Image (cartoon, rainbow, N blue to C red; front, side, top):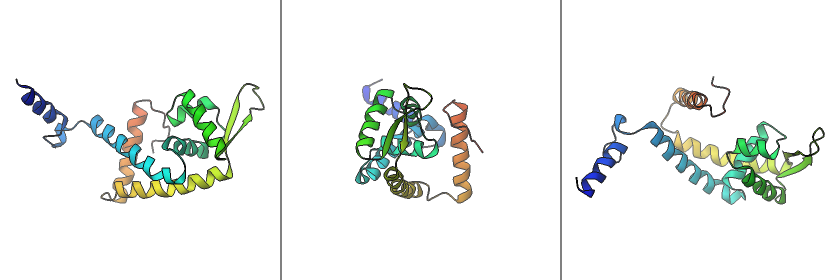
Length: 165
């Protein structure tokens, strides 16, 4: 088989040449969606003065606060070292504050400030518009089903979401 034939065969198996549902792996589609969302979210929140990782961290802190650095790293999908640098940058911008844990002298708690809440609200508006564009071809019922399927898939893989209603 020539190199061109081999490439065409590989493209066919991966869905580039044949877009039938059977030809495109779900994992591949989710991977592509993840990359596209990361790029679009980064572009959407950058004018608001935050990175996509900082936006994710603010979203985590809005749901559960305070968090230790390691907790925030895990929930924000970054390494503890990256989380430490991210928190330093966010603290400099006044988006978060760090305080010693009253029960554990070596743990520092991270919580969102009022400026962080305002920034998160602005970011949420832009990301909601992006999600709206992404899901515009789906009915409300389909959107709900899509979200339930995604949560169920994450739960099946042990990826951390608890509520799969």
